[in-house]
Amino acid sequence: GIAKRNRRLDTSVLKKMVWIPANDACSELGVSRRRLRDFIQDGRLRGEARSTAKNRQYIVVNRSDIDHLALTLNDGLNLETTASRLGLKKQRLLALLPFICPDAKKLGDQGCPWSIPTKWVEDWETLIQSTAETESATADSVSLDHLLRYWPWTESQIGKLLVAVHGGAIATCGRMLNVHGLGSLTFSVD
Image 1 (cartoon, rainbow, N blue to C red):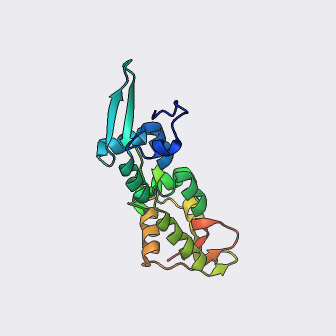
Image 2: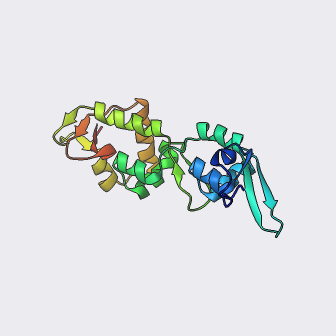
Image 3: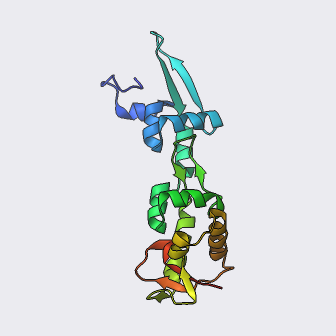
C-alpha cells in the first residue's frame, strides 16, 4: 500500500499514513537518499528499517518529522551559484570560503555540495551595488580583480581583506563598471 502499487487505495489514505517510504520523503524534502540517511542518523528524522514477507528491506520515515524538517530546512546556495553571483571562479571561492564565510558547510562527505548562506551572498551583492561607480582604477588605487590575478597574496591574506571589507573596517574607493562581482571593487593601494 505505501509503495502505491495498489491503485484501488485512495491517495488521501496514503497522505494520512504516519510512516512514509524513504523515496517519498526524499522527494518531499528535495534531498538525496544519502542526505536522508544522514538526517536519520543525526536524529533529525525518525526512521525505521522494515522488511517484507520476502525479506526485502526498505526504510520508512515519520511524516510529522518530514513536515517539521521541511519548514526549517534551508540549504542556502551551492558553490557554483555563489561563485557566479560573486563573480569568482569556483576554485578561488572554494579556497577563500573557510576564511570569508565560516557559516558555509558541506552537506555531507567528500563530493557533496556546499551550503552557503543566502543572506551572506545578498549582503555582498548589496555592498557591491551600494559602492560608487568608477570608469577604471586610478594610479593610487587597485581593483580586487587585479589583486587576485597579479599580486602575490595568499588566500588567507585575501580572506582577511574581504572580511575587513564586509565588516566595514576597510573602505572601498569605488566599483569598476566593466567588471562583475567582487573583482569590481577598488581599494587604495595604501
